[in-house]
Amino acid sequence: MSVRAGGGGVVTPWSAGVARPARPRTWPLADAAYRALLRSSGALVLAALALIVFECARGAWPAMRTLGLPFLWGTEWDPVADHYGALPYLYGTLVTSALAMLMAVPLGVGAAVFLAELAPPLVAEGVSFVIELLASIPSIVYGLWGVFVLAPFLRTAIEPWLISHLGFLPLFQGFPFGLGILNAGIVLAIMVVPTIVAISREVLRAMPRTLREAALALGATRAEAIGVTLDAARPGILGAVILALGRALGETMAVTMVIGNTNRITASLLSPGATLASVIANEFTEATGKLYLSALVEIALVLFVLTLVVNAIARLLVRWTTGGRRDVAGAA
Image (cartoon, rainbow, N blue to C red; front, side, top):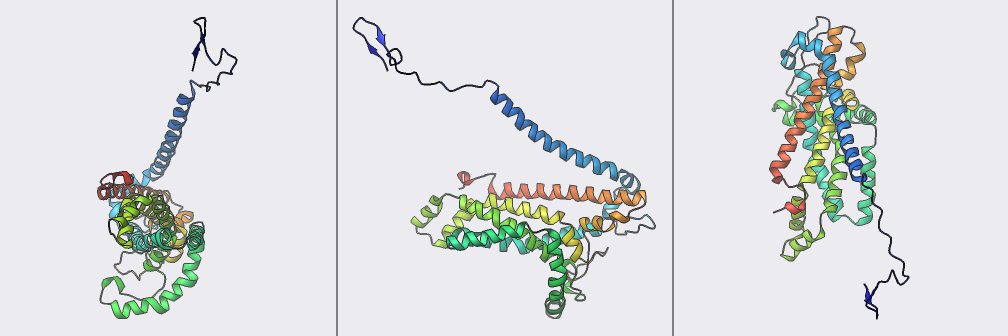
């Protein structure tokens, strides 16, 4: 703003004694330093991942060179004769994780919808706090609960009923041990439910209220309006499921305590089994031979690769089911 003086000169507020507003300080190197910091952080994560792969591959090289690819589909695990096969543990890992997700996903998503959409605010906050506390409980506590509480209940009540009523199916044949694949799947499901509930609830709460209001304004019922919100929140919910699946695949102590630790492949969920993580926890301290130790390290490498492959497939499924969109802006 300026005014022209009588003599033809221009008088500005600053020349009239008014203080000129301070210009913001500029830091020419701030943006470059910030970008370099972010690049360094990303590179550090990739470097840590590369070091893990390198160390596992270095430790597993003697077994890889001696046993070759048959290690992946071999079923014999005999440290005395130096015969090693990872297929029973690979099978146990996939079956227990699939069983856990089969139980945890409907329960977790349903609880998240109730807490985000239907529950009174006080109830939602209180229950959400308790569920998030479950995620912080150490896994060995879940293992103890599975051994001393869940296993006797399964052995005396659930498994005999399954055998008598569904014993014609291969999944429920055998004896009621209490410790086995079913116990491990239930414990894993309980462990990953808090992750699914907490993340899914936050995703649902982050959805714009205009979605619900627009659906209701068009004549949708409350259930149909919640369905619209769920469709928009699908990428975030699937991300929560992927995180839960990653934990189920790599869980060690709780599974080791309740799965029975038997090196065999069986179709029955009531039979004992073993996972990639449990065999490492059970036998690593007893591995005296070089090939024995190298085989256990190769088991760890197989678990690492399995986790990467499963998560990559899950990411592809997310992109396929959501059309590649990452937020509600892409919702149809």
